[in-house]
Amino acid sequence: MTKKNKAIRIIELGVKSYNDSLKIQEELFQKTIELKSVNRKEDTQIPTQNYLLWVEHTPVITLGKSGKIKNLLLGEKQLKEKGIEYYPTNRGGDITFHGPGQIVGYPIMDLDNFFTDIHKYLRYLEEAILLTLEEYDLNGARSIGETGVWLDVGTPFARKICAMGVKASRWVTMHGFALNVNTNLSYFDYIVPCGIKGKAVTSIAKELGREIPFKEVKDKLKVHLANLFEATISSSGII
Image (spheres, rainbow, N blue to C red):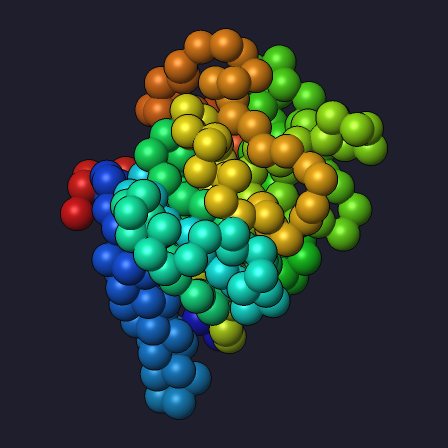
């Protein structure tokens, strides 16, 4: 049996397009799957690596596997005029926006190093967000049947603050979460966020009435992820 590696390496991608970030994700994802295949075939025990990519995307709208194109409210010409890219993608979930002021986290993790349970994995990602929001005196919550993190669930004022969508193969994950920190929320007017009508989107900055330092939020997220996954987390700079 391959030795479990519970270390997670953080890679800062800085500001990067969705497509360029996806290529990096896919490269690390495939590399991990290939190593697992070699271990199995050759009866070796080379540890697989775990990564967490931090990125702030240039404006982009992405559509998940279960998404409906009708939830995109702009045509190709309008998207181009507004400087917004559009990508259908292979993550779970429906439609969402990524852009400046939003912390996007892409864990490429081999769950064989932790636990083989996708439901638990998603709940842990949500819990890390919930605990981080709590540090800003924001009472986040889960909404039944709707992956992600919300405020004022079950009320007419319910609003989403963090979207999630993942993919996993052979217990290796990719894609992840997008937490609205200082995000320009007007971009969400161009979609039906996550395909859910009648619910608003918010950000930490909007809720608190002030801009929030990115590094501060990342540092809080890092601590909670490390505790939940019982992992050691280290940073390795920008690529």
